[in-house]
Length: 240
Image 1 (cartoon, helix red, strand yellow):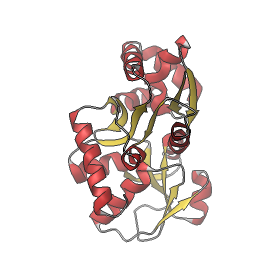
Image 2 (cartoon, one colour):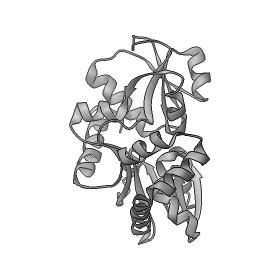
Image 3 (cartoon, rainbow, N blue to C red):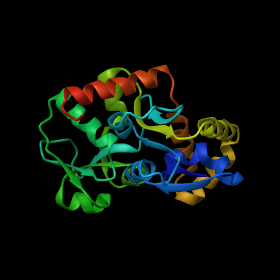
């Protein structure tokens, strides 16, 4: 059975034991790529971009990638000390974050033009002063560039709710429970998970421990309300 996984650090903890057990064939990809694979039937389960779940009308599962405040890995980085009115490059790997940024821009009255760009953060910042990056690229960008916005923090400030970036969808029963069981095991064996993740991703254990504690992976009441509100705001701003 083939299931999807974000190819980012943010899915490492919940999938760690599951991958060790080898019960499923796990396919890694960007959020956009997993959306394509799920739609064409190449995988039966995956966390998908929240925007894609809303757009396609999929039933949201129990697993998610969210944060109640700073998320650290969905950020606007810059060569400048502050956000001016110049355009913001947005990674083409993003679906949810790009549309969340459009909502935040409109609600805050920002006039920056948002431009979809293909490439790594260094390439994006050759032609732009600011760039919205996600996942591991964002985590590494924090070490080289100034962070001007964290979309988890911005969404919390705007709505008072957690920011939901990814939500599971499935064509078979029971996989959410398998992921959440693996998540609980990972939390109980966090020292092992952090150590392996640090070696794999070449990131400090102290940061990874904080990052894993920050992420929300269970779609509870507040997260579902935030997902609904995201949909409402997408409609209001002409994105859906």
